[in-house]
Amino acid sequence: MYRDLRHWLSCFEECGELKRVDGVSCDLEMSGVWEILAREGKGPIPALLFDNIPAYPKGYRTLFGLLASPSRLAMCLGLSQEQGSRLSLVKSWRTKMSNLQPLPPKVVASGPVKAHVLTGDEIDLSRFPAPRFHELDGGRYIGTCHGVIIQDPDSGWVNVGTYRVMVVDRGRLALHMVETQHGRILWDKMCNKRRQPMPVAIAIGMEPALWFASSVRLPWGISEYDYAGGIQGEPVEVMPGPCLGLPIPAHAEIVIEGECLPGELTDEGPFGESLGYYANLGLSPVPEPTVRVKAILFRDDPILTCAHPSKPPHDYGLMGNIRHAARIWDILEKSGVPGIAGVWCHEIAGGALFTVISIQQVYAGQSKQAGLIASQLANTGRYTVVVDDDIDPSSLNDVIWALATRSDPERSIEILRYCPTTSADPAVSPREKRKTKLAPKPLYSSRAVIDACRPYEWKDEFYPVAQVSNELRLQLLDKWGHLFKEFLPDA
Image 1 (tube, rainbow, N blue to C red):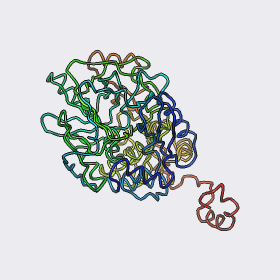
Image 2 (cartoon, rainbow, N blue to C red):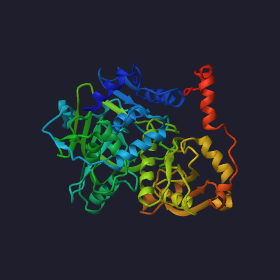
Image 3 (cartoon, helix red, strand yellow):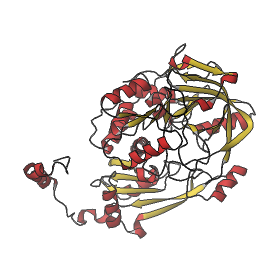
Image 4 (tube, rainbow, N blue to C red):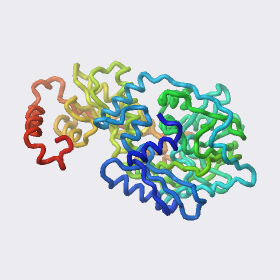
């Protein structure tokens, strides 16, 4: 395993999955370069470490693409980096996830993040190269690949969530949390209902397993610190924040301590989001909780970690797909649905908007049952497709072929109305979202479940597939594969 982000980066630099780039501006250039590389590049895309950033102190760096390759994600999760496919990565993670034993964090007196501590008039958020990610963004974002640490005042439970953070000025931040997220519930509890300040710590450049954990939908009351410790096989080291006392990662690159005050909101956004739109309220900023900064801690030569949402595919889509697919697979089996052969959430649809489940049919209605359960396991789930076990759920070619040839719209499609959604959903009109900002009001959307399996009643009579058999394929590759090695990696 790895000790911290820097140890992690040194491991991948040795194997060519980290590239250092000098002289790139944090104003649109870094994110633009990364987006082009991530969208158009071939093979495993290296993480990019930007250094010697114009107008910023020497040594201040930014990192893009932390978990944007299968091998980097596998190392983060403590899995073999020799995964045969994306689906095998889901299977490996689901197996580990099912047996994961949470490990509470280890409290230490101090850590590398305390190398520099700024308070009072020294506080200046503009000293860090926080990027402007998209051309229509309303500000610079210091928090995209990070953890926001909030403690429940009643139970002491510590939540670490990835809620985006925009720089407002030298000493203030805007904190965006959607309606169903734990941080939003805690903010509403403390600032709205009890009218008391909410202490907040924002950790940037954490251990990769802790960032992964901060984006997982864990049950209320389970800390992401404990979950990350279980992933790593050893506790995350935390120390009391010097200003507010919240437990902060001792090996983080940057930690910002602050408070949200009751009734204090500031305009946040617009910001290009992970589904590929400015979907919160279009190009209108939205009032969000304000963080008044009390202290900034950072290491020597700090690294500001960045995740770049955009029209899919984007840099943390793979992480989200593995996370969603493994969770859905696990819940389906725990719900008693047999024969689950694979689950995949397609990156091109933002992950949870298009989920495919592959099953071995053993009874009538099983495919519909699996689809209906899975359709409710994401806030913004839109389409759930169920296919037979001869279909690779991660292959859009296979999935669309099955959908077009094995489904009958009248029999196969179920529309579910009045399902929950969030303000990140681009299918909900800005008018409806504005109503929820003025007064609490639920947001709804519909969902579709599509049964693209062979009809159970006559599946044994279904037409044979016209395709080279696996036996003949292996024979031909053995005989002629040497002629096509550059085109066929398996040859």
